[in-house]
Amino acid sequence: MFQGLSEKLESAFKNLKGEARINDLNIANTIKDIRRALIDADVNFKIAKEFTEKVRDKAVGQKVINAVSPGQLMVKIVQDELTELMGGEAVQFNAVGNPAVILIAGLQGSGKTTFTGKLANHLKNKLGKSPLLVAADVYRPAAIDQLGVLAAQVGVEVYSEVGNTDPVAIAKAAIAHAKANNKNVVVIDTAGRLAVDEAMMLEVAAIKAAVNPTEILFVVDSMTGQDAVNTAKAFNDRLDFTGVVLTKLDGDTRGGAALTIKYTVNKPIKFVSSGEKLDTLDIFYPDRMAQRILGMGDITSLVEKAQAQFDEVEAKKLEKKIKKNQFDFQDFLTQLQQIKKMGNIKDLMGMIPGVGKAVKDVDINDSAFVGIEAMINSMTPFERANPDSLTPSRKQRIAKGSGKELAEVNAFMKQFDQMKQMMKMMNNMPMGGRFPGMKR
Image 1 (spheres, rainbow, N blue to C red):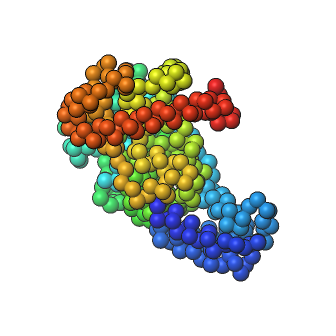
Image 2: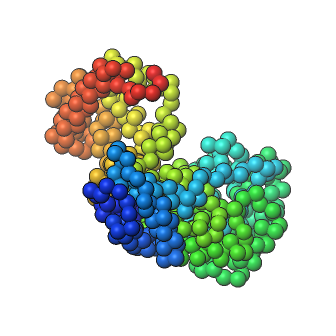
Image 3: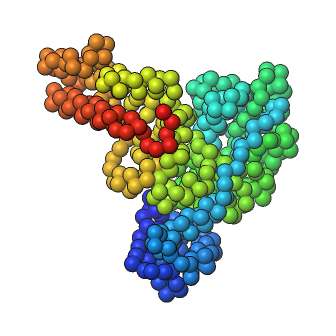
């Protein structure tokens, strides 16, 4: 995500290496390179120019204290300006009402229906709501089927009327159905087109007028860059939507849409989405996104994802086992499965400061642990609980059962032993391997 922009900004900051202070002369090339990096990321030239002028005005003449280099100071200034450009702070999503009505709009292919399923998952599992999804795309039967599949995965109801070609009537009937069945949020998936056209605008505007939505979310494919910003403006002129959703952030995203959509339509980005899994939906935090663009990682989001997956009681049990050097293969398998639930492995590593750059050219995918899981699943319960019981004949059986070579099984056993030794060493450290400030 934003890899090209991150690399070019990092290169721009190197112009200030070795300087004692920032002035008009030594900042000129840096500003020029930052502007070029933004334009290459598909940011409108006018916005890129205005942005770099703000950065230059804040930077010139600032004294650089001994502990901070000019390059570091420039990074901080750019970080603050990027955060402000993307909205400054996260804007709360409004799901309050009786019922709350959420209208989803966007072009066909933007990930609108998939987002609707992800939002249902977010509403149900994170906000404790009882959502009803509404299939108001009467032109594309596949959209209704897709919504049904997604709803089944989440465990929520879909309201649809086969044969009814009036989306306004469907939306109104769905709200009545929600009230009668104690559904406190109604999410309406509207039809999209391949391009903005008058018929689509009239239709979605009519739905808005009929249901008076609590939120109108415009879904945009972040890979379309500046075109996405232009489309957002056209929709906003007609709908006056309340927020933006950026999808497909795991793709070849240059960043122009994320950086400038708030500036152009003056509406906040409320969610960002990546991948097809229904739990890959995140609240948009401008400051965290700015940190990731500048290669600083995003520890806060990483910790939040971990907290959502790891049970505190189980964590304490695991801690006791580690202290007694009793960590076994079943514990390891459980931890792997929880990590996988947190999201794409490479994206997670990118949230760790400094690691994203190190793994940018490394092919890491969610199948990286399949072989390890196969080996552990080929063990008996006794073998999982007793790693020291694995004799050569047992290892040979595990290799056959998992479709691996004996050498691969031996390599995994060696790595597992090394990991246990590392855990033992950490438990012997002051504070039990914890960082200062962490709770015991």
